[in-house]
Length: 244
Length: 72
Image (tube, rainbow over all chains, first blue to last red; front, side, top):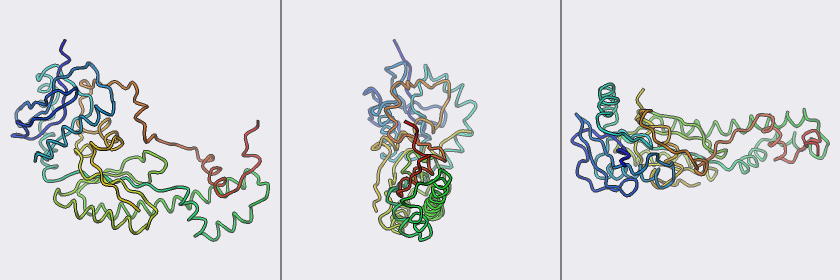
């Protein structure tokens, strides 16, 4: 029984039509040209695709390999899209969205997405805060050893939280201001963990990645050894390829 | 301290942050099974209510209140 076709991404023609890539379920990746677009797809072997590590990374790997072969401009498709035939693509995507897709491809041409996730060690930051903030540490010392009321605990907890927020905001501002100037578009995403302080994606000219990378390092150094940064410098541009 | 360079296909957290809710989508084509998706929550979202946060901070600097201790 056929499960249709699994889709990976859309490239501008002539696009990656002759690449030997392996897709999900070890299926060969093929290219379908429709008007000015080239779709990478493979035969679907399942009715629904589990969002497993292998499948998620496998989908992204197809796009990264095509990008690595020089087909840098791509509209990545969300994980798990399958179609029964190309007529659906014509009717549901190309016909209503062709102009918007072309505009999006033109905007992405010559640019790349990079991502920065900044983490701190909250416990170490708190110790630093208490060491550096004399009024707060004096208040803590004054309250220490006493049986405190809930109001007192909430009050000092609140003061500490505000001071921690100020530290967090200083880090966010440094990265936001220092990196946004190098990008034509920025998307700030939710933090995914308690330790994550900043999570943003930047659309930058393709050839300026080295400069951007150096700037990430330079901002990190402003905070000596307080931060850990995950810098993603090669990805399909999910954050900037969205139809509205 | 340390800048770790990654690409999306080498990091599950990077790909999860993008591929499930961003990119081009036609809702009618989505064929995703979310069975076991919680296994992927390697970076689970953490939301802590304000008062709990205050108590947590006070405790972290060595302060506690009798009133903050839940009844046995």
